[in-house]
Image (cartoon, rainbow, N blue to C red; front, side):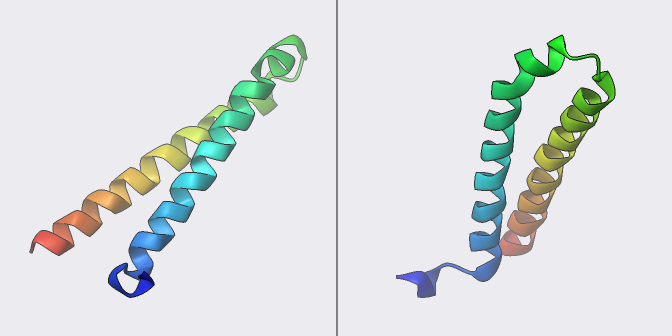
Length: 69
């Protein structure tokens, strides 16, 4: 069954699962982070999440473009 899936696609799935886990953890910790005085940590976490969301979407678009060509 694994033969029909490419390694790139499996890698994209793994990245997607890690993104969902990080996003869930951030939402879970958000009230605690907002109470703390350390706003820099909150900003860095949100910036990292944005990067983690944008990069795989870009990779998937490139992957689909290569498949259609």
